[in-house]
Image (cartoon, rainbow, N blue to C red; front, side):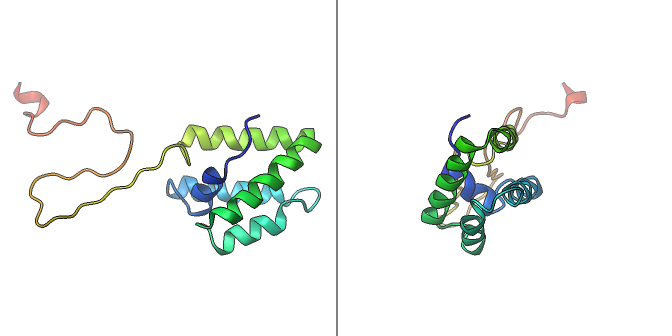
Length: 126
């Protein structure tokens, strides 16, 4: 298992990825609350200020320590991390900014686009 990164925890805590990100955070809360209370205080602290990297680092350290000591927790945490990876939560920051006056034309903001075409004739007109 790769260590759980603070940036992944911040992304999950802030709901990156919309509803799927919120569900991922909820799943982590449920996982942390099973068994010993290790990580609960850190989870609560990050919930109160989801963009605080120090709180995320503290939660990361607690989760990684617990995973080292508890093989069952490690397996569940690894599964959670794989889900985050599949959803691309916390893997590569995207910062979209539009500035500098009036924009004309299409604007697409986001990450990981494919198959986008502008000013092409409809498929039936080719």
